[in-house]
Image (cartoon, rainbow, N blue to C red; front, side):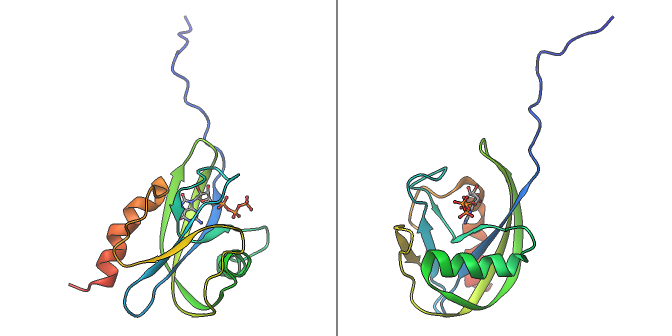
Length: 143
Ligand SMILES: Nc1nc2c([nH]c(=O)n2[C@@H]2O[C@H](COP(=O)(O)OP(=O)(O)OP(=O)(O)O)[C@@H](O)[C@H]2O)c(=O)[nH]1
C-alpha cells in the first residue's frame, strides 16, 4: 500500500551567492543602507552588497556593488563570516566582508537611504542580517 504524505516540503532553490560589505570606521561605526523600492524587502536595512555575477570573485562583486550603489572604492576587505538563509524569494548564501580601507564618501546612487551607525538602531533589518549585529558589537568592543 502506498501512503501519500500530505505535507510536502517545497524544494529549496540552489543558493545564490551574495557579497556583503561592512565598512567599519576606526570608531566602530558601520554603514547600513535601506533597500530601495522595487526590490524584495524594500525599506528593510542591510549592509551594502549584491549578487555575485558569473565568473566574478566575491571580492570583485563586493567592489563592483559598492561603486554602483554608493560610489565608494573599497581598497581592501577581509572575509568575516558566512550566513545562509532561505527567503520566500530566494535561497541566499551571504559572504560578509569587513573593510576598514576605502576611498570616497557614500552617495545615494540608487536613491537609497544610508546611515552610519554605532549601536545599530535602524529597523527593520533583513532577517538574515539580524544575528550579525550582536557579532559586530563583539568585534567592535574587544573583551
Ligand atoms: N546586500 C545585502 N543583501 C542581503 C543582506 N541580508 C540578506 O538577507 N540579503 C539578501 O541577499 C540578497 C541580495 O540581493 P540584492 O537583490 O540586494 O542584490 P542585487 O543588488 O545584486 O540585486 P539586483 O541586481 O537583482 O537588483 C537579497 O535576497 C537580500 O534579501 C545584507 O545584509 N546585505
